[in-house]
Each structure stands twice: as C-alpha cells, then as structure tokens.
Length: 484
Image (cartoon, rainbow, N blue to C red; front, side):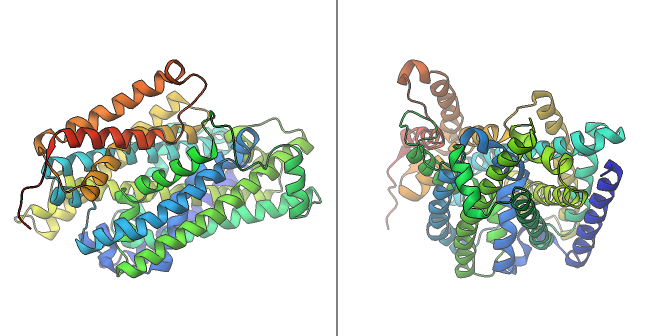
C-alpha cells in the first residue's frame, strides 16, 4: 500500500467530517459552541465520549504494552467504572443544580474567586499537556509510516492536522463535536474489531484458543498481586477510580459534553453507559494486544511497544487493513484533540477572561474573541507537540498518567474540600496549596527508594496530591460562621 494512497483516504475521511460539521454548525452561537444549547442527545454523547476517553494513545499504546504489562491495564479500567458512578451521583447533581456552563464556577460559588481562577488554570495546564501528548503519538505514527515517505516534515503534518480540526470545530464547537465524535468512535471500534478478526483468522485460532495461547505466554494476566509493585491491583483500581473522577468529572472538556445533555437523568444514564462501555472496549483492546504479540511471534516481527500495532497493520497485513488501521487511528486522534481545543477555548473565555461577565460585549464581539482564542490554542498545540517530539518519550501513556498525577491533584483537592467541608478559605491564598502540593509530590516520587524501600507508589500519587492540596486548604480555612 503506497503512502500516497493512504494519505488520499485520510483526505476523504476529513472531507466527510467537514461535511458533518457544515450541517451541524448551521445557526451556531456562543452557547452552542460552549454547551450545545443544552440540547444534546445523551446516547450520542455517551457513544462519542468513548472515543474522547480512549484516544490514539489507547489505540496504539494499550495493545503495545501487553507484552510488558499483560492485561494489568484492566485493573485501572475497573477503577474507571467506580469513578463514573461517583461522577454520576456526586458531581453531576451539583453541576445541574447550579446550571453551570463552566464546572469551575462551582469553585467560585463555594470557595471564592481566586480558587475558581486557580482551578480553571490547572485544568488548562492539564488538558493542554495531556491532549498534545496524545496528538503527538498519532502524528508520529502517521509521520513514520506515511508522510516521511512523501517527504513531508513533522511540523507540517502537525500544522495540517490542527488546521483540519480548526475547520470543523471553528463555528459549531460542542454542537458539532457531539456528532463528529460519534462518527469517529464508530470508525475506531470498527478498525479494532476488523483487525482482531483478521489476526484470529490468520493464526487459525478461535477466541478461547487465542486466550489460552496468551496465557501460556504470560500475556493475559489481569491482576498483579505484588503489593510492592506500582501495578498492584488495589493501587490500580483505586487509582483508576480517582483518575476518572478527576480527568472526567473535574475536567471541563468531558463535562462540557455531559452538561450539554437536556437533563440530569439523561446525563447520569450517559455516564453509567460510558463506564460499562469503557470496560468492554478496553478489554477488546487488550485482547487485540495479545493477538498482536502472538502474530508478531509467528511472523518474526521485532517491533515492540507503541510501534507494534502500526508496524503489523501497515507492513504485515493486506492493503485494505492498512487503510482501515489509518482511518481508525485518525478516528482515535480527532475526538481527543478537537474536544480539548474546544474545551480550552471555552474555559479560557468563561473562566479566565470572564466573557459572560462583560455586559458591554455583544454576541458578535464575543464570537470574534472566542475564535481568536480558539486559533491561539491551536498554535499552542503546535508548539507543544514539537516539544514532545524533541522529548520523544517511548511510552507516552505512562507520561500521560504521570502528568495527570501532578496537574489534576490540585483540582481533586479543591473540589473535595468544597464538597466535603463547610469551611471557608482565605481566598487570596488559595493558589499556594495548589502549587505546593505537586512540588511535594515530585519530591516524594523522587525519594521513594529512600523512604519506602521496595514499595512503589503508583496511580495513588494523584490521591496523595489531592490530599496535600486538601490539607493546605484546611490550614488557610476557618469554620463557616454564617447563620443557616
């Protein structure tokens, strides 16, 4: 399969997305951009959010990591399900009761203006780093297997992809993304299933026989019972629950789509549906990872990690499967990148510059400024993706989880303090514990060998970070003396 032909299919796929955007973006305004006029269908939101939650990282890194970590990632996914239930019945009722456009307005109401700005700033930092890391992985795959052969430089590939995303999100925002994410999730899952069926057929295995072969090679172990290991099952399950609680429930990108649903009941159905769907889909990805390693062993493929799936799909499968893989990879890329840029634009407009507070800004002026900020975030993405290329981390999923542990911890601490306690804080000091907590966690992470011997902190670093923030907020707080 020639690189030029593969690229042609990418262009056709994008043209379809642009057509969907043109139809759904008609008569859009700022509120449809931010929250879809609170008229989104919960079934479409739930299905589309599968693609947003998974992204190109899951599509490439999770199957590739099976050779090293077996099915241990399923432990985290079990934790995800617990997190989704917590979001549905703890956070969503708060967001709907307060009729929020930005979820960080809760912090302003409960803790104060500076706490609100601090929370929104940590979201912008967290989502920018996480989304660009995901974008980098997919751009790198396209570059190595297609565009290098065409003489296209890495920076140009990134620029063109970001321009594509801008074109179909520029007007419609969330209103458009609800539909494009549904299309893209379908493409990603279809690619996953077709590739799995092909490998099973090629190896002449049934599903039970494939699982037996994976077990024989140590590829299908789910639970790690070594308490000292970072992947010890209790650490992973608890960590997974808090990752979902923070990276979904306290994340404007993910909640922006949920609060675009008509009512709380539908939003809760959406969240629970995502939880069970994610458990099922991640299981499929891990099963595919096991198949890829069995196939690589049979075909003497030496690629490992993030390179395994692209290498097999583009160099050891029939041309039609190469096309399906590329389209599925692109389908995995766009939901995470388009939603991130849209949510960052929304948060910056609402939380940082306070667009809704500007009574002298009419709809036209707000729209003009919003579009400039949208473009600005796309340019920022370009710069950071180039930085990731320079770093060239070999296991981007580990990097993403590490980033989340440091940058989402303060958000966890802020919301937990607001929900659990009735105390008031010295709002001017709100940023101090939020910035000190990640620094303390960085020191704790570095000193692990000296403090804990063979014991290693895993995903629970996020919880510790939130706890440090919570304690810091308590130290600058006082009992609420207002009469009830």
